[in-house]
Length: 243
Image (cartoon, rainbow, N blue to C red; front, side, top):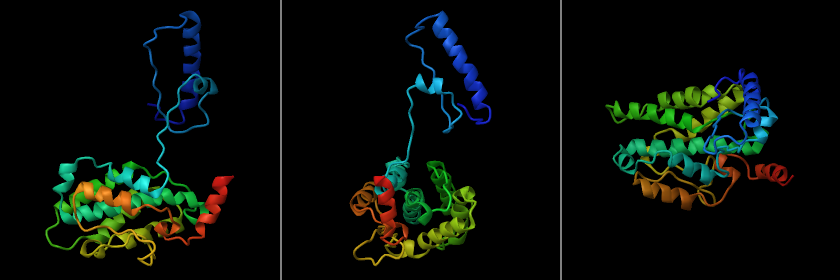
């Protein structure tokens, strides 16, 4: 794995020369030989390497529902999930929605984030680990919302954020999703939604399959309201998409 981006150009230039030398001196070589390289995107990768390679990339899916499915299915152990505390189920579901929301909101450009951030499933994984530890140690019936909001919004996801307004946006999402109404009733996860025409609620604690079914059936329509934006925010996004 090519982890050091600063050493990558020289390393790959030497590699390209060695591969070229092998192909000229040995010929086709062993047909079973495969060379796997993995790296973050970089413009410094030699074009000769790229031309001779089969390139694979793992991109987040497009759309809020697809992102939500991907996030929720990141926890595939059905039996383990069904045995979890009811509070943890609701919080984990809201956390998956938050993860999907901050990723997909990037499509709206300056109406979304001022800067681009590489949020990943690793942020969701680490947040869930912290969540499990907090819920396991929970002695009383009060969920430490302030602690969770700080960890999720300021450390895990907030660790990527360098713009003050973007940090404020992340905090606003945390306040919207992480509060007592999430576990007391079916909290509407659409910020500023009227609850009628556009709505997506966190269901009462249930089984893994029913949560997944709720995602598939509940997130049918893509709308900027899901991110707390005005419906007109989609005009610029669709215009750029057409271009």
